[in-house]
Image 1: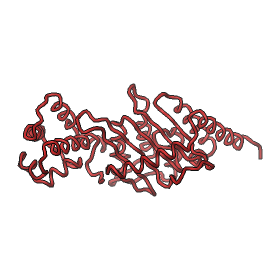
Image 2 (image 1 turned 135 degrees about the vertical axis):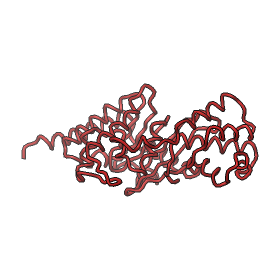
Image 3 (image 1 turned 180 degrees about the vertical axis):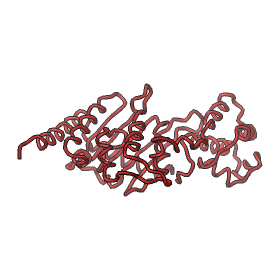
Image 4 (image 1 turned 60 degrees about the vertical axis):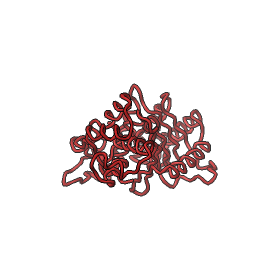
Amino acid sequence: MSTRLRTARKLLLGREIEHMITTAGVSQTEAAKYIETSQSRIAMLVNGASSITVGDLERLAAKLGFADPGYLDALRELRRDNHKRGFWNTGYRRAYHEDLRLLVDLEAHAGRLRVAEAEIMPGLVQCESYIRALHEPDRYLPTDGDAISIDDSVEARLARQAILLDSDPPAFHAVLSESCLRREYGGRGVMVEQLEHLADLSRRPNILIQVLPFTAATRGAGMEDRFTLVRVPSPGAAGDLDIAVVESQGDIRYIDDKSAVAARETVWTRLSAAALGAEDSREFMDHVARSFRRKTFSKP
């Protein structure tokens, strides 16, 4: 799935358009004729890669037999402002590179997030000093001829984390390889701060953190890739949006194919089953933090 111009609401609206076409029993080509456009444009709408006017949306729904006022209101709400892109181009938010912007938008609309990480703490649970340590090797990150400072990148990530602390936050569940806890960024003091921050977050009712020790057997489910399973609730009739976001060696892919998402669900289930429970995971975090403290304050 390409990220070009996609947002969570455009993806949800695309699913509703596909649902209406399928329920009406017509082809995309026939549906295109109802609003005097092309089949390729309908395909782009379904994939969340194009925008539609409110008039065309209402006309398409009527032609396809959908007249329920509540449902039409849901369609209009999904369409509202879903095409605007200026949000990403000013201030610290321009620190989000193009490939990451869809993930940030999906997180903001998500009802549930499940993350598997092999080497680095998930971005949503990183403390400020840890974020800064990740960006220290490069003083400035170039983007479109402009310079993004480390402070911009730190502020952008901290702002992104606010969703976990909202009054109606998503359920967040992470399975972290032991390597995430032990791989040093910024020195041992930073790692102690990060582990304490992680343990504090894990006590929130919407957050579950599981540690996968090196000794755990995962029944063939490895952690070679970083991935996130995102569920975005839908106000319409097409059902919730499920996407697997896979990160590997600087590459990010958005997968919405049902069988591919199901395969990641299977991997996730095995990893979660093999990992420590919530309380044992906090004890493991504390154990690793104590080892960092001893090394930090011990005399040579």
